[in-house]
Length: 108
Figure 1 (tube, rainbow, N blue to C red):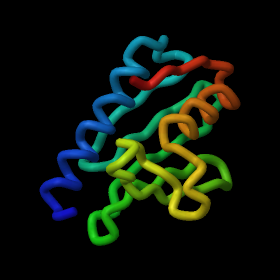
Figure 2 (figure 1 turned 180 degrees about the horizontal axis):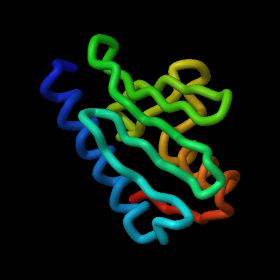
Figure 3 (figure 1 turned 60 degrees about the vertical axis):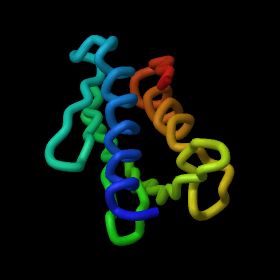
Figure 4 (figure 1 turned 90 degrees about the vertical axis):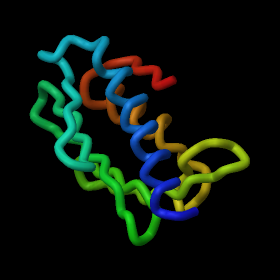
């Protein structure tokens, strides 16, 4: 995948995450962008950071003491963990939202 394709996929992914969090009360959880970094701030003070790693064509996610590196899997159309291929980006983000704010976030 070339850089333009990667950036297009990353932009679409970030938009989907932003759209999911737009429906949530910002006093509970708020998502915002700065450059190619998306931050989700939870009311309990925890932050989840999702950013691009252009040279590797990956999305990196971190929250608390956990971190994931996601590669795009074209056949499934999903971002999958480079570690175990089982963790999927949107499921990981939904799990973080559930743990940090008891939110049932659906990212479409």
